[in-house]
Image (cartoon, rainbow, N blue to C red; front, side, top):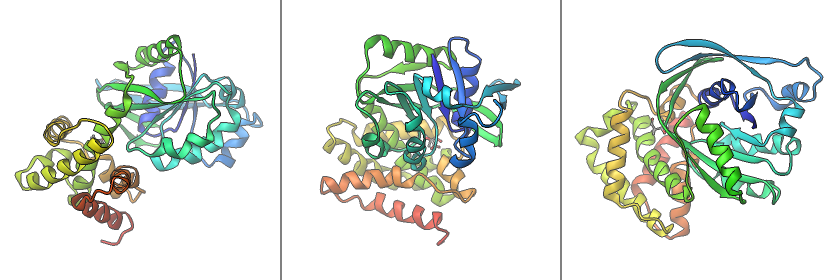
Length: 316
Ligand code: PAF
């Protein structure tokens, strides 16, 4: 199966490296970090065919150099799958650059924190294209430009968010990804998983960013009242979205994720520390948008949203 990975951050590098080592998949990479006009030469074949070498450190510490072809026009046109691993706020631009170069039956997989991108890109796709969401708990860290470290073994869930896919096609995509980096599981109702991840991100990411703490510290008793309130507010929105995620079960999931990633900095804190834009608009921002639609007020989440926006804009 021919796959193009768009994005060469930690997760893009993780997937591209594993797919490149799997003979069942033919992978190339479209490094969105470079401006599209610079990439046009590559895509149009006016530059010589090139590889990108990723210095990849496996979870057990072994390092190796993995050469991945840079995607050209023909890679893009022949790809059956495009795995988009860019920040949520870059998804729409990345796809509008790529779509004119893709074939009509391509399957696009979006892998990022937060929600709201499907609504942004749905109208860009033709009716024969399908869109999947990928949620992964693998930990990866981009230590340097082309150096990716697999910091924690996790699992990956995928499911359809727009369009339709035949059973054989689902099986083919799932098994190709699974044989490259297991476990990969298909879900007929990925929306519930997306909301659960969003809910965890709504709690862990803002608290760790505002207090500049590692994930494990949100388990300190001083955060218990805040975490409880946040879980209650989020659970209310999920109920209005037709999902059953109780405040108690959400609290238990947050605790479990905070424990298993205790020594990690959340992606939002990393972004704040490196003065990058955060995904707050697609995490708490998305939650608040949905709440508004259901005429719900979420004072605690709203406070955290404003505090992260202030941090992001350097106002504090
Ligand atoms: O955004 C992140 O960092 C992660 O999704 C999570 C779950 C908070 C763990 O670090």
